[in-house]
Image (cartoon, rainbow, N blue to C red; front, side, top):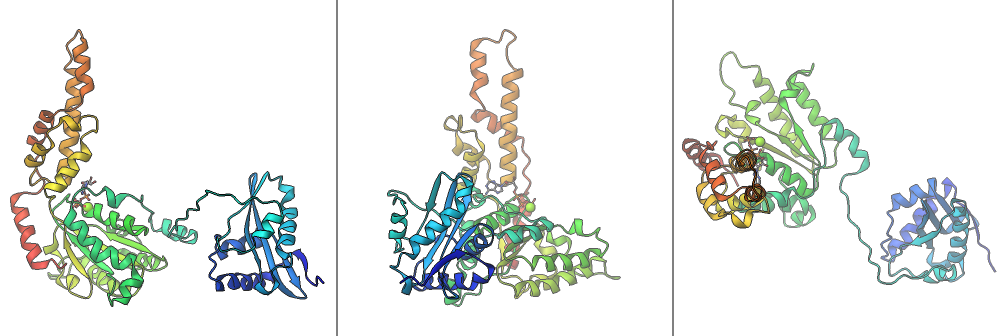
Amino acid sequence: MTNWRIRDFHSADLDGILHLWESLKATNVEPVYALSEVLASCEKDHAVVAVQGEQVVGAAVGRAAHDQGWIVFLATLPEFRGRGIGTSLLASVENRMAPHGLNKLSALMPESETRVEAFLSRGFVLKKNLRYFERRIPVQRQELEPLSQLGGRILARDLWENVAGMRNEKELLERRLVLPLAEADLADEYGVVPPRAVVLFGPPGTGKTTFAKAIASRLEWPFVEVFPSRLASDPMGLAGALRETFLEIAELEHAVVFIDEVEEIASQRSGEPPSPLQGVTNELLKIIPAFREQPGRLLVCATNFIRALDSAFLRHGRFDYVIPIGLPDRLAREAMWQRFIPATVVDDVDVELLVDRTEGFSPADIEYAARSASQRALESAVYGMDSDGGASVREAVRKGPATQDYLDAIADTRTTVSAEVQQEFLEDIDLLGRV
Ligand SMILES: Nc1ncnc2c1ncn2[C@@H]1O[C@H](COP(=O)(O)OP(=O)(O)OP(=O)(O)O)[C@@H](O)[C@H]1O
Ligand SMILES: [Mg+2]
């Protein structure tokens, strides 16, 4: 005797759907569509339920997308299986979707799903040799709005891989920052307290900003840069605007927050009368402890002048690590040259020689030398042509920059980091570095 019947879904059935969902989960079935998707489809797409008396004992939910429809949920309470309820639910949801003129109806079900018969009896064919792929996207839609107000953004996914060389720095950042933040549960099991704030310091152009972005990309967290110079014009004043900005950041689920040239707002507090920036430094000193209490975020401050920072700013408890980012080693320089030399000519260029000749160059210097070599080579190929423009000349035009072009450009590049600055950096590592 059938004492159940099928009817359209009403909002009052949501509890029943939840109960069905839980009964599925209780049997260790991991449905393909998330609960939030199923519930949204119940309200906005097509849903039918099987009820016995008032109780929801089964449900089918479908969604039409252009010509193809999807069954996003099909479930029957375990004690009601084997009575043809699944088949009736499918038939009914199909009817509801029919006006869309679908030419295909599909369903993705967990392998352990037992209601195969319901699909087969409705004429579905089990497809073999398909694989289901899924990737979690960490930023929720509701976060996009506050994020864009902060000028934050989701960075490309490959920035970490694109940091050439710098193996030691990368390994350090991977171990100390990325691992405990990305594997928060595991870190917790080991009693590791995830880092909340770090300082990157080093000479100009060594890749501090690049690393800050790469960390955000690696964690798949949004990147929010705080620009003190922009906040300074706020009617609240810099300190007030800074406080406000961090309150907004607190609304985000995850974020890598970046303050570049932090020495500008956190330099040694000294002098009589106190400079107006001292209030800002004090504000920042108050902001950091509050920031540290929230999980899922990391503050990265960068500076070229670590010595100029207020000593209270750097002390333990505010920043977990004070990490030097120095000039690139051989491997890093090699990787950078490989990147900057066009692929069409790289095999003909003596990269090892360029690596030798660019000791003491920052990544920015190497990039500059590489660009100017390309520019020169292009100019001399085009404007250095004989007036008759013979075939051999056109050949040369096509060749691209050669080793000598690079060596000339290197010789003409003034390195950003002088020996003196480099020496100071090494002293800073000893005195202030904390990894
Ligand atoms: N490891 C790297 N691989 C490839 N390019 C790099 C690397 N590090 C830095 N660069 C390039 O060098 C330039 C300078 O890097 P970046 O701006 O990150 O340095 P910085 O330390 O933040 O400099 P500043 O101290 O001036 O703020 C950028 O164009 C960046 O793309
Ligand atoms: Mg920078």
